[in-house]
Image (cartoon, rainbow, N blue to C red; front, side, top):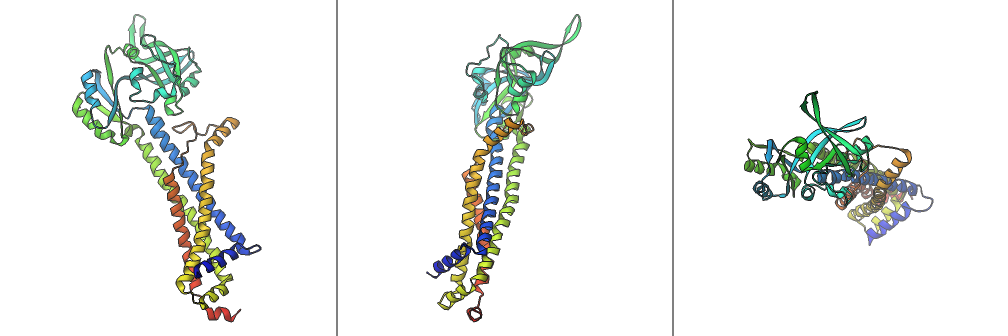
Length: 408
């Protein structure tokens, strides 16, 4: 009962009309809410980049690629053996090489990948970013281009695109680069870095273009667990032969970026937690003023029989109540802004012709609010708020009732 009375007195005074502490308390709570909201927004944006890297970029790219030291013949037995390796969910043969895409006077570097459309979904989400009617048929020499590459070449479906290889062909007129004219069948709009350099053609057309006959350059593999890529690579090479093939996983091409995103999230959480800490410790000044202004009430409670524990608990509860108000408000504000942020960014980009994401792995602002992050932020902020109440509570507990009441 004594704790409830003390908390009621402190809260009523702290937020009473006309009290100087009312404004200070509001500022402290508002500062805490703003700090928590900023932390929620920043962490949610970093989560969005991590999600897009895993689902969009690595969804388009193979998790593990086995390259033949020389072009190899893809046999059914080898495909089945690789498929049976632990953690492997899909295996397909592929043909791949660097080249140029040319349209009139526009030329751009591309990575040409020969695929079997009906089987490629086992290792890539390419089909998710294409019109369902779009298909590659062997012998028609159709090509799929990434949206960024198509915009650079200024082509639309139905246009003719010439793919040029660095390999030279000897003719009576001299050396000429190997080239073939393709028809643009569709545009891949994954909104990732893949769109800027990808060119997909049918595997049989690629074999003719690269003059491989019935051979391929290797196998692309999808895994159930991304982080088992190196272990699966070792097993695959033991089966296929290290003198015949070598492996390259996503960790080599995007591993540093993935680790950088994880480190950035941890770093931003720690740094912005200091901001939350500063806002939380603003409660100290508020509670100290409550102790000074209501010292007589504390003294009366002590004369009525309240012990030190009661007084300390009262001010800890008061500070915790103020902190909880700020934390809940900050979480709500941060969640709302994070939810609206992608739409606001898209509107600003189109309205003011901005391209702020051109240097990143996706062309839009990804945001993902995770419950575990909200709980972690709330717990961290709450602990900081509780810590900030200890000094004012200790100060209140040290008041001597006789000295305080003697001056009343």
